[in-house]
Length: 627
Image (tube, rainbow, N blue to C red; front, side):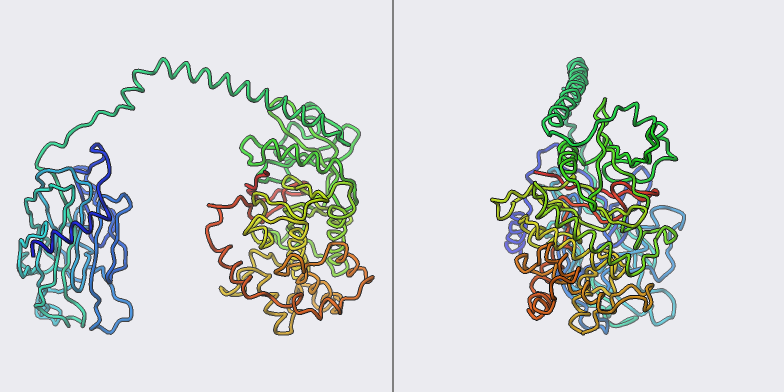
């Protein structure tokens, strides 16, 4: 047995060697087996060991200073799911108000064996205390009192107690008993093993109640642990004068960097040949009553949006970039450069900007009816607008015309990259205008596509762009298709889930299309006050735009032509690639969105409006960055 145990320990240590420096070695361990964290007297805290898993598994503690393994399965009971944590069913013979009583309310059990490891312990002599209490069987003349539990105890692979019976050793059920053992740690590892002895009952009070049980473990050194002086602390104390000088240099550096950044922005803005004006900070403060809270009409990841009134009475929307914003200087300049060169009825109009002090401010036209997302499915029901069918159809067409201009008609071809309902604003007559060009990219005629760092909004990004950074104007077409579904249905793509099987509204749309009942998507608030023919056209256009393959999506000019009735739909609909979902894409999409995208992508969550808005909405965090 000695050779086998040594071999097993060596195998284990190959996977968990102690590579930490001596200053990081542990000299004490306190584990509440089967329970949560418990603070007892003298400032001692027993760490939690409450993982419910049990059969043939290995569990390391979060700090990797201890671990346990469990073997066996209660196959002889009638439960599909076994419980490897026992809970007290008898009266504990310990002061209930004492913190230490919490150690005995639960215990870890196993049908065959439990092994606890102390890892990266400092070598030396220790006292190991094993805490037990029989909390499953009871005393008295009940059926539960007939149960007997036997198991063997090993420390460092040496048998220290054979046929241990908790109830007998403690003098009854619910009575704590502590067994202490001296142990010499020589390889930085402590091993405590509990093995079922194959004796005792197995069916009282029910089948499957047997095996080793332990309530807590404490390990304390029989020597004074070495004290290692923290070199960093020594260096810090010795270097206080140096640190003070460095702080001063940092402050000067920050001041210099801010001035340099401002000069750089000024230089870039001068080089843009802007078709907009510039405002002074004094003008902006006068227009917004010094950024008065009552003038605030929106909040986004970039900062705040205020309503303003210029001296001549013109209403404006002031987008103030926050110092904590993730929209950097490049995005600020990018947005000014993009919008200043674009003039179209379906694009939000930029009046100018202000770069003064530490302020980065954009001034837009004021749009009275907020954004499309708020109008359709805003969090405040009272703030939603009752959009009739003709208005929805017009908004649908307005967005398509705005994108057609960006992709095909403008002097500079642009991919917006963040088309979503919260970036579509509505004026007093409910004309739709595309806003927020901070993530937009130029699309040169000579380029088939752009390879770029991914940025945008989860739920609206095209698969080829979200997964591979492959960007063309067809990524905007996909996003438009998602927004189109939202317009017709009145539901948010990312927040609507009819069942756990469907990730987004788009998935549900494909299912309804396959069932031949696509019109079920139409917003029920419309009742029957809409054209079924027009609704089918808009829904089919939306699904064409969200095709798995970017090459099979229509251009935005084709979409406009379809919506205006200049092109027939039948040829496109007869192609199954336009009307059926690609199962591989659906699987990929589900896998992609349900993973932790924040580790690999920069993205924002769809939510309230991010530019010119009419009433205060919750913040929308945008973390997408431009290359």
